Image (tube, rainbow, N blue to C red):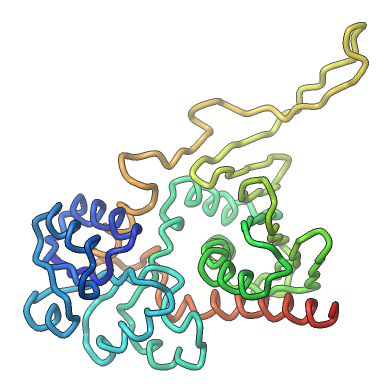
Length: 323
């Protein structure tokens, strides 16, 4: 593919456009609702044609592929214009049918539709995935949401729009998995569950912290070593412990995990672009020529959405029992 059309002009479109241009895509046009000043500014900034109507951009732009980055509530309506067309589409998360799983069958047949989980393309995440596949180990996933656990509608939006990123990372690193021994702790504002792999083996734990002043992280404990991505763009490795004995000035013994090999053992996803977007754009451009891809298909994303709904339903039931 050499060119692409863009549907939608939200904040995320800026990051996508920069990466697509760097990946040598020709932007054939951008389409947004009538009167969108943001879309007009993007069109002017990148000197690309502007369209107010999807049918118009489909007929006139002659785009070989499309990026769809609209509000999650509008995704299904927008994608209905592409059903039956053999056109590759990169769709901003959470992807089609996020708010109505019954619509999923309409899009599952589209083998060249992908959901833009850009964090799959972080170098740090790729390195952690490789270590886990080679060495195994136990994984701790800790995700953070800003909303309150007691507000079900906020929880629903947060899980669908944001935690879906984390659910996809679990799937990307582990493969197929299920949740077990689910606990919803309302007082502590925590959702917690065991992670079982496709062989039903307990290999990790997931937590969602609501309204907590901390950062998302993934921890891998394997063969006497600990690997942590926190923030997700940076991988740290620890395998030694520094013990500081009590002194006359400090009566407390302290234990500090030590980084190994500062620099070479720390993988960072730092580029001139928002991490993940450029490699994702390159993968989308070349997916037809590759045997495998890190892109998330809409079929693969179905399990992310179904897990999201399991979490939402578990929290809903807990809130109903409380009342």
